[in-house]
Structure formats: C-alpha cells, structure tokens
Image (tube, rainbow, N blue to C red; front, side, top):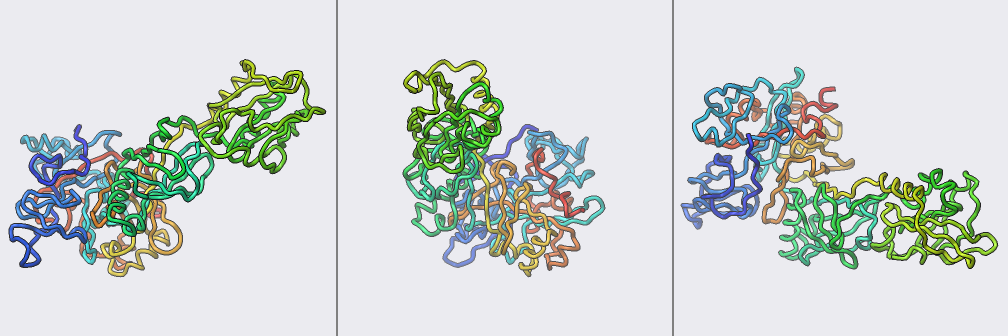
Length: 548
C-alpha cells in the first residue's frame, strides 16, 4: 500500500526503467510504410509518429515498444473516496482471485509475488472516478476517447469521457504573493535565457505572470519551444522553476511554496495597501502615535489626513509627503518600485517625507513608519528642530506592528493551468463537437482535470482553468511537437451524452474499465494507480447541477 506513482520516465529503454511493471497497452501497432524497419512499431499518440524499436520509448517518454505492442508506461490514476489521505496503491487491471477485502487494492509488488490482487468487485462504485492522468490519447481523435465510463450515482446513470488532451493552446497563470517589485508590466520572463512568458497586471498583494502559450511553444525558435514546454511541464507537476525577468528580479517558483526573490524566500503577503492598513488599524494606533505612515508602492497611507484619522478627531501632524496626492491621506508614487519598504526602492523611510509644517508640527511628535507587512517598521520622535530622531519603539506600538504581520497570510506561489480544449479532442467525445460545447455552457457537463474542479471560461470554445495543486502529482506530460499533455474529463447524465451525439456504443461499465482498461486494449494487463480524493476537491460525480 505504500507505492508511489513514478514521474514520467526519462529513459530510452524499457529494461530497468522506473515505470509500472504492467504497462497500459494501447493497440497492436504495425508498420505504416515500407521504409520503416519491420521490427519497429509506429506510435500514433501524437503528430511526431515516433518509430520505436523493441524495448525503446518514444521522444515523450510516455509510450514504448514492448514485444511489438505500443504500450503506455505510466499507470492510469483512479480516485477513491475511501482511501485515507496520503494512501495510494499501484495495482494491475483485470479481475483475478478474490482478495479477502475486495474493495482494498493490493500493491502490485504483492500481486507479482503471488499474492491475490484486487478482484475488480466494485461494491462501492459511487466512490471510484477514473481520471485522465495516464489514460493516453487517441490522436487523431476521430476515434472515441480511451475511456468512456458508465456508472450510477444516486440512481442516475452517468457517463464520464476520459482522455489526455494534447494542448498547444495552453499556458500557466502564476500568482506570486509578494509586495516586491518583480519586473515592469509586460516585461519578458525568461527560462534558461529563452523568453517563456511575461509579467502581467498586479493584483491585490500579488504579482502575476503569464507563462507558456502557443506563441512561445510554436512561434519562436525550436529552442524556445522546447524550453517553454519543459518549463510548463515542471510548473504543472508542482516542481521548482528558475526564472529571470527583464529589468527585474530572479525568481524560483513552485506551486504551493514560498517564492524566492533574488535568493530570499518571501514570508508575508501584505494585509492591504497602505491606505487599507491605515483604515484597518486606525483605532489601535489612536493614542499610541501622533502620526502613522504605511509605506506602499501603490497607495501610501497617512493616518491624520486619512478619513479614518479624521473620524477619530486626530490632530493634524503637519507632515509633508513626497509623491502624488490622491484623496486625503492617500499618496501615489512616493518612490520607485523595488524590493525595499512596501515594494518600493527605499531603505530609509524618511526619504519619502519632504518636511514638516512648522505651524502645525511640534517637538515630541511621535511618528511610526511601517510597511504593509510589518516586516519593516521604525519609530521616531521629532526634536526641537522638527527633525525625526529614531527611538526605541514602545511595546504597545510594537504589538500593533506585530498585529499587522499576524494579519498577513503566508506568501505562496499559485499555479493555474489554462488550456483550450478544442481541436480534435472534442471528437473523442462526440461526432458533433458543437453540441459538447453547448452542453458545457448549459451546465449539463461537469469538466474536471485529473478529477480536480475546472473553471470553464465564458464565451466561445471550451477554455478551462484548474489549480495544479488540486490535481494528482505528475498530471502533465509533453510531446515534442512541442505541446503539453494534460488530463481532462467530461461527466454528464447518460441521457445527455446520448443527446449530444456521444459515442454511446463505446460506453463501458466501471467494472469493465477497471478489469480490462481502455477500449483499444488487446487484453494484456495494465496498471492502475489508486489515489485518495484530495480533501479540498468536490466529488467529480456528485457536483451540482449534475445530480441536482
């Protein structure tokens, strides 16, 4: 029960590779032309059409020639509600002798040692979902998808069409929680020197990158396409990627991990802009400081001028700020963007103060300057010449600064896969693809990626977006065209599937699928990788409106 799914192998031969002992057989491949050596088989899983010798894998490391048979070297990932979180098992397809507990998969190592493997007896059919991870493609998709699974949920006959799509039109949208200046908007993002994306609009407390996409995959040099493809696969599979931004920072990003900016791991996502921080903590600052400035690259807040300070009847301080004044107590462009205080380029917070109005300010005035995360904070008292002199911060004020930090969420990197499920992929579902698109837009079809919920963008086509952290590990592969290979599943009522002109004659029961594999299987054994449904994910077969 302790087996773990292997990463897409990087080998050019079957012997000794870290892959399931029981690969998925796709179809009996035959030479397609007289020029090809008769001992080879041609892989038709993508347009590259690799010619594979016995015991050799193709350029994508996902298919191989084993005894004249084209096989998929990765297992098919199957989600199960009843597995404990973190529990997983690799088992063969095909029902064999009954296990003592027919619903508990047995590790393939046990089965190959003569122990009984899982029997295929599904007493809990409503708790099993076949994902597209490892399911293979049926390129060109005039053929039905590899798995068209019939099941019953709460008495409703359901169908799930399962495949891996070859995505040229896809990208990753990356959200990096930091105030640091990463690079100017529209700046190129590079990986190993090649342009693989760009900086896009910043969002609240986060910097955003758009990485990959068809223009980098196919519109540049071969090297650019290859490196973009590799980078996208690593990001999708939750691995670390090193990037540089023109005119900006060096980054190491990984889904679910703190971003590393110029060699320093980020800690906090800001609680809000400078103005928001003033508003949130104004009542706590009242009576503890005479003036508070929250330094921010976007909107720097000044307490006594701010509406919050006015509501508290705070005495004006006479502070004179640099930058462009917006509404009272809110200043833009107090400094240039950077990696210093509040995402600016300053190391000395006093540099954004032009001076003090002598008719308003007074000696002994207490000034707190802090960043939007509380990571930088200094306490000053004005001397007889109205010059701020740094002093030890009172414990009561330190507690407020600490409270700012407490309200900052941990800085993380979020990676979302964005892909256009167009092309011939839809033909694997139905002979009339527009009916699939319409059914999705009419909420008759639930779209998932590796069993993870996918957001379907409005407008034309089937443009899906999914959080890679909610997808199974190693969900993404590549083909050297170059393109990304990603799982996708379409779940609907059987009646709706028949109405959209689906391949109803290829629907197979869940039992048949788990016993025999894909429809183009020739009866040879295959491998299943059982995995617990992530706690954060809804059950793909039970989401509204499907059963509502």
